[in-house]
Length: 554
Image (tube, rainbow, N blue to C red; front, side, top):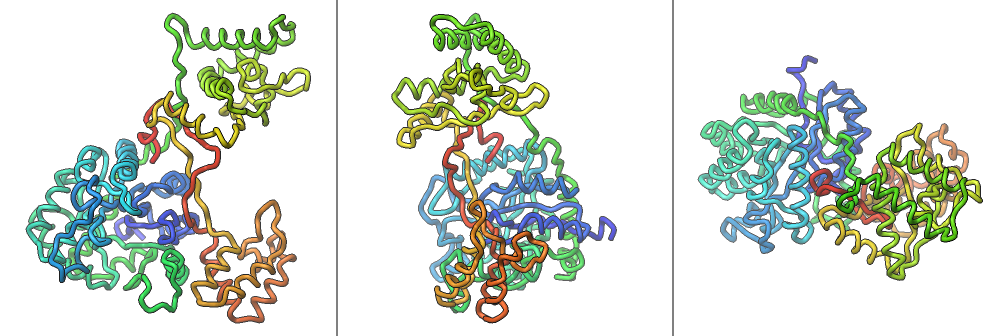
């Protein structure tokens, strides 16, 4: 297939569109590679949670990563938390999505500057435009952070399409012109898709007219939510988990139409025979060519820089702090062995560029101790550092115990120091408040976690959406072999003779072979296992940066 005959998917929901997207990144990149496509985008619902994972896997697979978002855009200003409707009462089905809270827009980063602007937009949507469960942008901040970005009118829930369905052509034209001005004539497209839905086809003539009037090129997308056509049943079950419904419920939320998977280029071109559609398919390749991922997620040392008193260098202040700590630990003096070890460690720390790290960590630990907060004596490799002991980071002299500094910091192997710190759970929030106030709320953040659907939970979820009694899922769960180090055998491993725990899963295979309901439950569960269910906050992880965090991560 020549490059001109190919196609690039630019509207793609992955597993990070939680309980809505079922495309696992590993499978998705394999499929894109097998189809010979040069690039693919990620455009999850209102978030950039998967951006780095996507980038890393794409580059590993030799596929150009196009990082984007399907943004929620407030129908008026992002600060307005009340619903806004544009049509008449009888037009409610065609009006602003979710009863008046948002429209959609597809946005991608064209280059490094665009990626950082997209991160800023995503973060501000959460901190300034969040309502109910949607993080919303608006035209004002889109204009403020438009450098390096490309965008489209979005899916059928976009502002332009919504106005067209309401019969408001002039307003639709004005909206398209507004966004064309924000992103620039070369960076804005009219997005068209066709899954056999009435809401898609009703706006086609209006989009064609706008395309001609404003000279906005068309762009064909497929609203993909899973990788293979055969994944449709797993995705349907995922929607039931999201809404608490069963597959048999007649009024449940479901995707009407068809084709929400990573189609090949021929399938995409065959959807429509019009010139507009053909041009829109070709333009996917042009959009991909515009993307320059150089510098995406490049390593940059953003450790906070400890404030140094005027008249001293960082090295001088660091060394003075260590010697003061040594004097505090040994008020009557220390021996030559300790002096030499302290000198050696300071030299390594300075050579590796970490004096500020030690000063920052020592600062909040000493603050905690001074404020009556219990701090652990130190664990892990940091206990091998005499400098850490002198500065109060740990409370264990490593020399009498034969602990090795090089396990903590090795001049032959450049890696970040890792200090495990235990605080009294009841006062942990006080420590976080201290570092937030000291370094700035925009430079300190908690670390997010992603909870996935585990094997037993997948069985119970599958049984529930299939409408089977709770006892069935419970019976299957109890037949699992004991967990090893907290992990159950994966569902695929039950049937994989090469899996190391295959021999322990005989009872599960017997249930699968003898009971058709168990078989249906386990088959569906395999499609759910491992997908992301929810986000959370890490129990201990806090990020501290010397620059605004949202300039670098969403």
